[in-house]
Length: 191
Image (cartoon, rainbow, N blue to C red):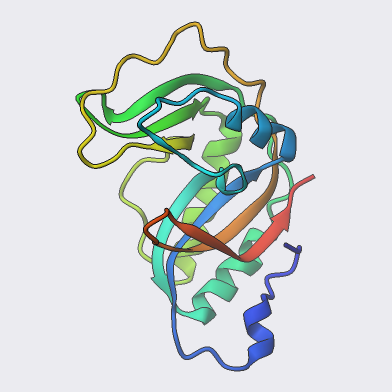
């Protein structure tokens, strides 16, 4: 990953195909990834591989390469985000119908400013805005579609130290039977 919005795809020539299943996310630094990966998850849940742990800022969907490049240039202005504490581990959308186990991250002025900045960039690039409110979290595991109600997450589980983020990344994801695969289209190193 680099500070430049350029990608390996650019060296291959023109891109007639749009980028698909795109999203903007914060990539935790190695100690934060390790701490998140060390958290216990229910045995019937599929753990997110440590290298794929991220905090989604905004889901985009499909976009043209030109829109992606415009967005990447605007993301380059983000340089710092303070450490963010994990407030709790939870099951979403609800325990009776579990889909995700998440580490909920405390909202902050810095996250609100980042969300506003990303929304402004998306609007300027002619991209639709995600109607859902920004809820900072990191998905730790996914439950199978037929999962029964999730039992309460052990309250004795220690929360990880505040998360630090090493980069803001524009990703494209591909769904596969084994889980999603992510490709970084552009990344900005955070100080």
